[in-house]
Amino acid sequence: MPKAIRIGLLVLVSLIFIAALSAFFGYQYWTKEIQKPLSVDAKTLFTLEKGENAHQLLKRLQKHGWIAQQWPMKLLIKSQPQLANIKAGTYEISPGMRPSELLQMLVEGREKLFAIPLIEGLRWQDWLERLRQHPHLDASTLSTESLLAQWQPEGQNLEGWLMPDTYHFRNGTKAEVIVKQAYERLQQALEASWQGRESDLPYNSPYEALIMASIIEKETAVPEERARIAAVFVNRLRKNMRLQTDPTVIYGMGEAFDGDIRSKDLKEPTPYNTYVIKGLPPTPIAMVGVASLEAALHPLQSDELYFVARNDGTHVFSTNLDDHNKAVRQYQLKR
Image (cartoon, rainbow, N blue to C red; front, side, top):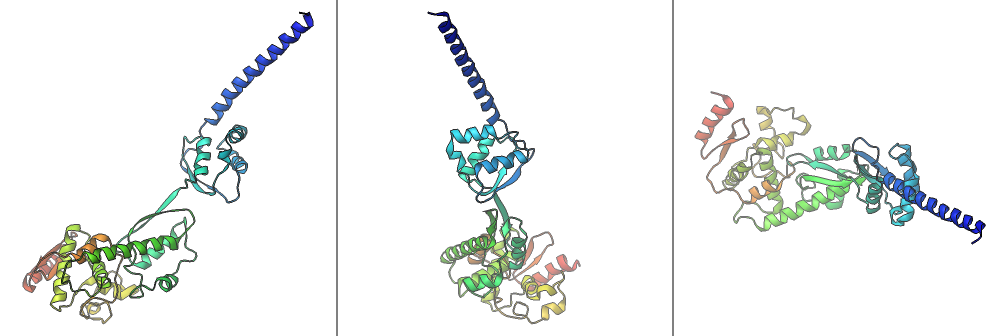
């Protein structure tokens, strides 16, 4: 073999070897780069805007300092084109997350879910304020009037018609979506509880049971007392006695309530003053949890007609006025 050809072959083999070696080390370096975690020190929210593509995303990641260079991720996307199909939304980046994991999360659309606790015993006005103040809910079109016009609930009042719970949602969700879920869940729970109710209860409709449940909700937070308090109110209704429950008076006072009920407030005639009116008030006075709804429809069997707070969250129950007055003197008047 001529010398020139031998030299040429040697050069070619050397070039192939160098190219292979470079490719090997280049692949090793690229693999190492795409395995590097994003440079974030704490959980961070990141919003991918509509219309933003993968290459624009990489520019933003580098601008934020979360990746040092773009080319390793560009090669990854080129080798796995499905990683370019990212979805707009708000995501949470965690320390230790690799860029490839971020891309996969965006492809699958695994957005960050936010939460809002909507608590039993509160009024619709309280819920409305919480919904409007949540930074990740869109409450720009939320109004009581539009919801009432849409659903036309009995009593023309949203009090009691929404199911308390912690609701989860994506960033920018319309607040009406949460309210609708709560409304539909309450209706389902009320229907199910009404169908399984005890017989001979003094309610003419599921709505009246809902009103009673709201009073129970406000009277006690002690689980084992709910059915017992329900029994007192049911017994009073059966005997045509006034309910005489302070939470209904407070609700009827509205913004005039300053934290204290006076004798004149108990005599003030409002539709909700159960010291003045007989029977139930016209609407619920608070949002109702399932436990209070069940208590209203499954009251304890008892002859009790009175109860008074011990000031520790629990109550003393009595079957007659004399015993009740003794309990009032002991726990309320302190004599």
